[in-house]
Amino acid sequence: MNQFSVESKPMTTMAATAFVDSNNANVVVCTENHENDVGPTDHLAL
Image (cartoon, rainbow, N blue to C red; front, side, top):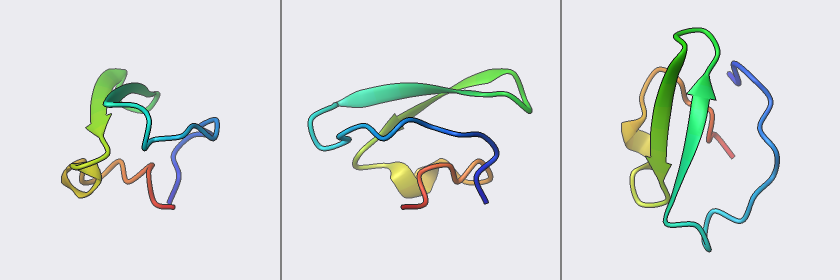
């Protein structure tokens, strides 16, 4: 359930990437080691 489109980026090379949740207008910081901790947003469901 992707709430918005995200460009394909190599998450393995990025320590942390900030994504903006358009529905909540909040900045969600996602780390490659805590993808599952994001919860409801679930935008990293690859």
